[in-house]
Image (cartoon, rainbow, N blue to C red; front, side, top):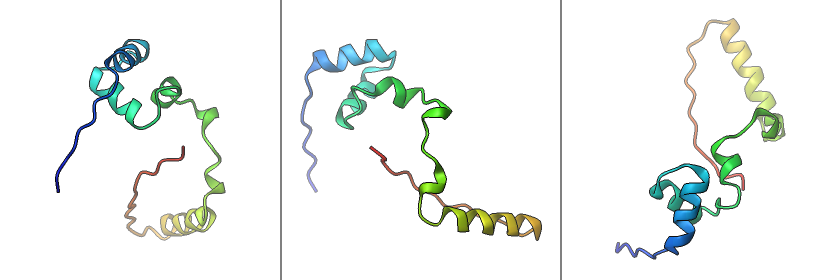
Length: 86
C-alpha cells in the first residue's frame, strides 16, 4: 500500500490551531475529520450536548444484563470501539 499525503491550506490549519488552542497536528486532524467548524464543542463537550444513549440499539438490554451481572458478582469485560456520530 502506498500512502499519499495531501496538503491542507496552512492558513486554515494555523487559524484553527490558534482558535482552538491546539497544536498544528491536532488542528490538521480536526480539519481532515471535518470538525473545523465544531472544534470547540468537539474538544470540550458538555453533558447536556450528548445524545440519549438509550436511543442506541440494544442499550436497554445491555444495561439490564450489566445490572444482573453486577448483582450476581460476575466478572465483566467491556469491549468498545469509537464511532463517528457526525
